[in-house]
Amino acid sequence: MSFTSSANTVFNKAINDYHVYDNVDTPLNNPFEAGTIEHTLYHKCWIDTVQWHFEDIIRDPDIDPAAALVLKRRIDKSNQDRTDMVEDIDTYFRETYKEVKVLPDAQINTESPAWAVDRLSILALKIYHMREQVERADATPQHRAKCQAKLDVLLEQQVDLSTAIDQLLADIAAGRKYMKVYRQMKMYNDADTNPVLYKK
Picture 1 (cartoon, rainbow, N blue to C red):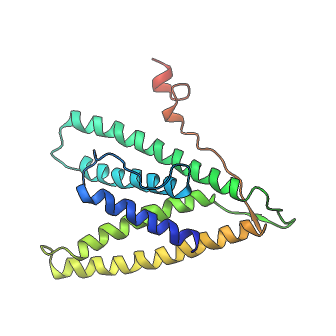
Picture 2: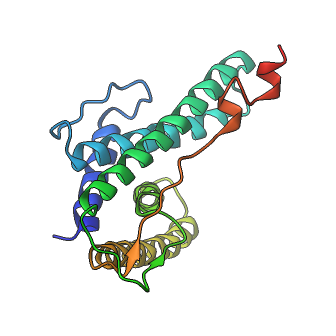
């Protein structure tokens, strides 16, 4: 099984497990063994899924402003957790391919493998929720048809992105491409670099 076939299976499980209760406060119950890549992928997609619903909730025009501020703080933390999980996935790839002899003409990719996997997780969420719209009994036929057309594109995109990630990993494994990971430096999260915080 290719890496992305396994990843997409894990992502779908995380999304389906979340929607058993469909509540942003549902505790994470990761079914995969700690320390495995599947455990990390599940946790990462769970974060993405909860954040997807945070973003829905905060767009409620009638939301209480105080509740919105609390939710914004939760979204900020979720974004940082997501970034940390992506970096954990890159650590896994770097460890997996650390013994590969890089060819003299090897090229670097525009993004690390884990950031492409991050997009694959978000894509699984888009597919799930677009399929929900296609199957909505209370929606008009026009709405369902429009969403079906979008779902078809998303499914094609999932195949293309999965193929591209597997090709990238094959190139890294063969030494045709090499990884170079830059850690994210989100200055607004750091009390030493955000002027609103360090000038207090």
